[in-house]
Image 1 (cartoon, rainbow, N blue to C red):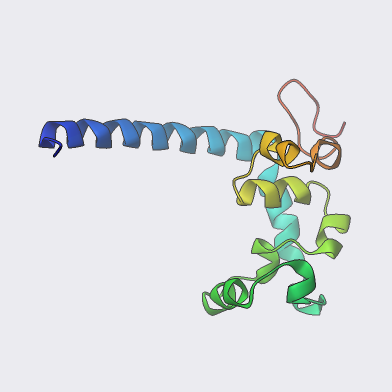
Image 2: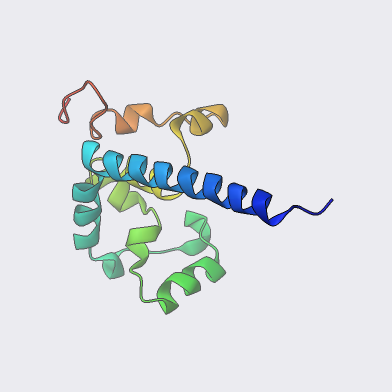
Length: 129
């Protein structure tokens, strides 16, 4: 069954509103959870000095090449153990970059709340606790 142009227009309006709402929410959380400061700290890392054993880190050659060829620093996109250990809140940064919720992580048996709880301010909490 073919949709009428009115239905398509309504679907687009609904989709646009949904995307706008998600963008507003994400923008709010960037500030609320201090993700911009975490991203700035990660940006300062000299990723070229890290040992990037792609197969051990679970990074495909294809993904690595796409990032490199677009001029993006790999450390901005790919989580490296040295970064996860040295930049507080980086676990949350990379998780949110991949658009995976804490609930989804828990469902696959990987709880990240203990790694994020001290570094990302949650509503009703102070940032440093």
